[in-house]
Amino acid sequence: MPKPSNLYLLAYNSLQAVAWAVCLALSLSSFVSTKAVNGAYASAGDLIYFLQMVQFLEVIHGAVGLVPSGVVFPLMQWAGRAHFLFVLRQTHEVQESPSVLITFVAWSLSEVIRYPHYAFNCMGSCPSWITYLRYTAFIVLYPPGMAGETWLMYQALPFVKKTSLFPDLFAGLSYYNFLRVLLVCYPFLCLKLYLHMFKQRRSKLGKHPKKKKR
Image (cartoon, rainbow, N blue to C red):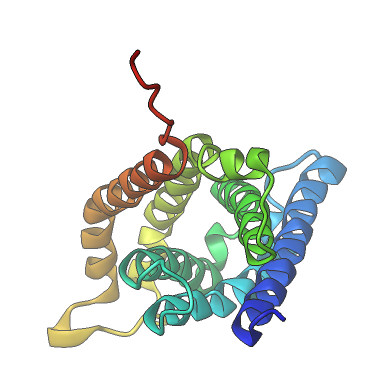
């Protein structure tokens, strides 16, 4: 009989897979129906925000040992996306930026591959082509996603500077200055996550049985 934790993870990953497929459909349908790149947030923004908040559970999953992912990298990815959405939701002037569509599509494509992979593993058997996609598609999808996040935060800077919606942080550091520092560091943080994914890829796909020499 499957363990309760396994059933929970199967349900969680299956629901996330379906929900992100809906996000992808909403993001693309706005583009297809209007032939414009400025409708992604209006179509899918609220659902993506909700799913991203729910994804904090994955940090907890790693912290309590429910999954072997650990805490650091899931937290880095969650925090990066959550901060992007925070800026996006508070800065209405950038909600119609093309960077939103680019980011939403890259995120959604990544998740409609990642979550089915997890769900199949919970059932004890994952098709090899899904495993291959899980550890290969990121090579193409991560760069536009990261670029979209960075581009939008850069576009938001002048609006963040003149609004009072963003309170000062610790030691009198304004959110505007924090965002400027983050933009300098962001490419290096993204690169760290990107290289971590390559390391995972080698560990999952790079193992080939050695032929014995006669």
